[in-house]
Image (cartoon, rainbow, N blue to C red; front, side):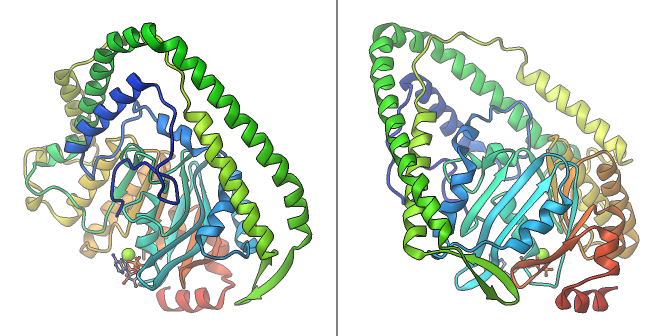
Length: 448
Ligand SMILES: Nc1ncnc2c1ncn2[C@@H]1O[C@H](COP(=O)(O)OP(=O)(O)OP(=O)(O)O)[C@@H](O)[C@H]1O
Ligand SMILES: [Mg+2]
């Protein structure tokens, strides 16, 4: 698990110097601290949350190269087969882009250098044998498990980067688990209301705290702003000069590096390999460029601030979320269960509540981990019907399931995971009717 919500320091663990606006930074820190105290791991989504941390995601191209180093290989390996298949099926905007994601538990390699992209509106169904890493894959996507190596760009932000405020990003992902994970000490309606109310109130507090800092910020700006900004500008110029110098070293190096390209066959797949020394040098340079560019991005000058209008109140937030919860319960025909505790619900009812609870946060993507596998057979249909409805409304979804008929009906793309890899993927008809990989053929023979 991720240790801190917001940790400073570079990939090598060293503290990085960050230029900053002292007053704005103080306000942010106060906010982080207050939020950390009562933040709930289940908190899901609020579209109004300021995603400014995303500014750190920087130049994605250079990062891919850097990551290969984290794999411990100075040979730069590219799974060309995997790239092609994803590109062929691509549609819409990228929502999640996974780059060279690896997950190990001790010595156990569960996810092995996976690169994959999920596009807006896709219903990606993940199937595979037990223990093949499907749940781990989903957990890594919203950092319930931290990948051992790799990048996961969600909505443009690398959420695998420890500097990113993961709770802000998780709010945009709804997660539904096999065992519902409802809070048994709260009524059904409270379960649905918990996260949106928490986020709404927390945003309101942030806004109020920011407004409270405005007079101090403006006073400091008047006293030190000009000198601070002039010194900052000087520093930014020196960073820019450094970036240009590094880039001018990198360009010829890349040309030379590309001439060393060769191929290597591993387990029937072909990988590109390059000269180790040049690869290592290239990674060092791109890493340096990226770090320096991030410093430039973060160098925010001091400025005068204005108070922002506070247009809501705690009471109003609670009323609005309560009305939303009522609508969601009506949608799943469970209005009469609003005030009961989850223990008195059937499995199917619990799972439908869990699904609308996730929807209450208006997520950008929904992740389902075997949502029906803990249900009695007669309850499976009602849950699958609800998921289908949500799918038809255009939600981007990643669904791990053993329900093959459902996968075929709802999925727009099916991924087969085994041996820590996505061994095959395709559109449902082609995937199920003409499987190619022997491991997939064997798997389908058993489950169909
Ligand atoms: N927290 C953990 N610590 C150690 N090993 C783990 C942990 N979580 C999962 N594993 C191991 O990782 C491997 C993949 O597990 P995972 O739960 O992702 O598989 P799965 O494909 O979801 O299986 P299933 O279909 O049975 O749910 C298994 O060998 C499992 O024992
Ligand atoms: Mg699982």
